[in-house]
Image (cartoon, rainbow, N blue to C red; front, side, top):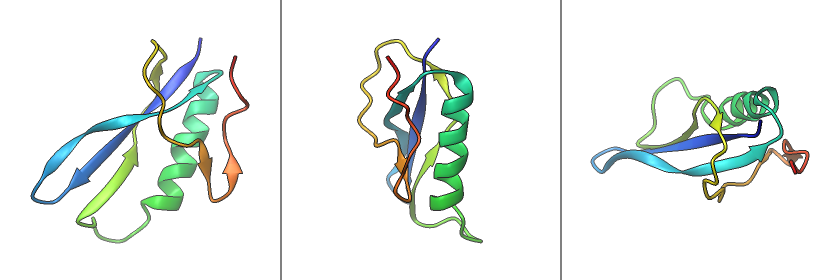
Length: 82
């Protein structure tokens, strides 16, 4: 089963939403690896910034539009799921 990672966008004063999805990934383990790498690279401040995007726990792929890149710090985390 393929999985996607919901990307949660939050901006102080404007609210928050699921902004899109990364993937699809070939399995849940691959999606979790991307989620952890993305958050480790992009959400590592001691305080919450005014604007941020957080990778959430993977969900099954059901034809969601995947408009987020699956690279983190130049490393590709999607082995081109079929």
